[in-house]
Image (cartoon, rainbow, N blue to C red; front, top):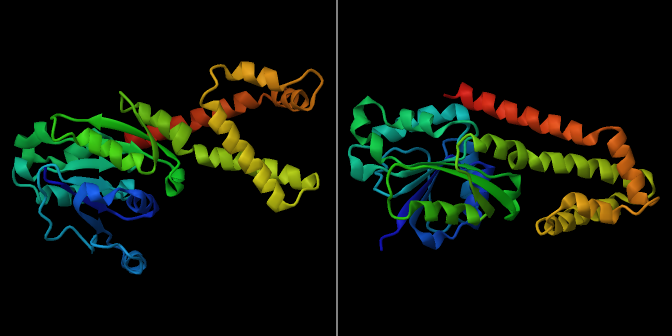
Length: 284
């Protein structure tokens, strides 16, 4: 079976994380398309094997079931989609499109690509959205995925899954609006965890530990708790087991409850979710 070609349009840190961990044998050729001259120079210094580094889409000819990853900033999506439009003539030229641009809906992307000149291809373009997070750089991302497919072409959903499995776990959502929740929880989540880490590390240092020891203690506690949390059915019950009457954990939890920490967290996540929805609506 013939292999697809893979195109990264935009090669920022997230695209690089995906490319570096990707099973490149899945594809016939891989193209990195990056218009920024300085960024291309830095890419060129690295060893990328037979992967081709290009400045633009000029001269590209898409084939059916090739895969295009839109990895540019949201405000650049429309321009890139217009370029893709100009390269499509008939059904056999339609690639599969994956966007990792936050807030740009599959409907908007389709409208940008399938303009009046391609209206006859409206029912043949498959578009996917992906929301990985910062942890993709070390292979520990959780990526929310949404499929807006209108045709079943060559197991493309399986290929999309393989691409993002290369940087961690995946979660397919049924509604595109659920990606706003994914954004608020796991997309922004690393920043929440780093915030907590910083507070705990500073507290440990104030109590007398070195920065190195404090960071190791906090990081490993979070890693271990996260792994354990995956298999815990009732987190509230587990918290109670750790909180001995009159003990140290209970003393800390009483402060959390007094200051209503859960409410603060809920409000923060709701604010992130609302902002994600606003961004999506502004890009429609």
